[in-house]
Image 1 (cartoon, rainbow, N blue to C red):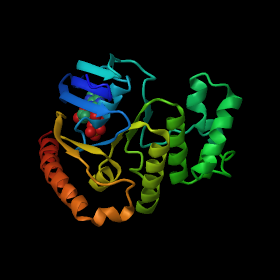
Image 2: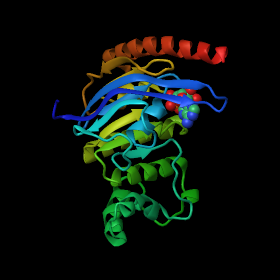
Image 3: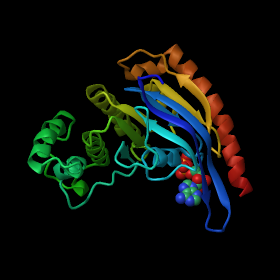
Image 4: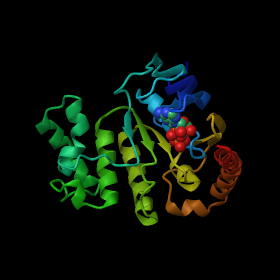
Length: 266
Ligand code: ADP
């Protein structure tokens, strides 16, 4: 096996039983090889199994078939191997921003004083200085997402799963968050898997983009994003960016149409 391969999925599939006694095939065998320190996005039509895939990687859901390997070791069903952040920030309303950000470190057994000493400079560096002692309800949606993202990073796993973390933010805040995420990724050298509905966001952020098929989800296409880094916001108007986006959208829209037909048929 390639020693640089951080996360590998081998023939991972999943079927769910529905409340009415039927079954839904959410994923057909999915194979992925994710090298260390890459930024990889996963895009696909609604309901194609993206979140199921993340739940399987994070150990929340057992795969029906297949294997999840981290650094070459099988980790099926194991929790705590990856950092995982959902669209909803899931900050605890009764804890301050500082206490929320250190939660992952506390869970891993870091003494509170040490965790705070580590988190404080980062809160300042990443635009949350002055809000350490505020509560989640007292800060903006963008700031809450930043706090949740910092908490995920400080949980200190090599692999971070981000499931549409910016989906609910307005366009301006989202653009700022993208810059901020690229800075974090560069500083912390994590391997990031990122789910988004937004192809431009996927291409802008990533080294690689996987496009999933309509349900049952499988990998329909794999694009290498050969755009230079560091990425500047104006890159979205470059010839290569537009070519990549056209190709990706062509594949995605065919799958989205299939997903739409499936929904109509239900
Ligand atoms: P996506 O994240 O791409 O929108 P999901 O992974 O949430 O898709 O869901 C994939 C399919 O599996 C959907 O049809 C969904 O209804 C179904 N599904 C997901 N979780 C469950 C579950 N726990 N029980 C039954 N069906 C599920």
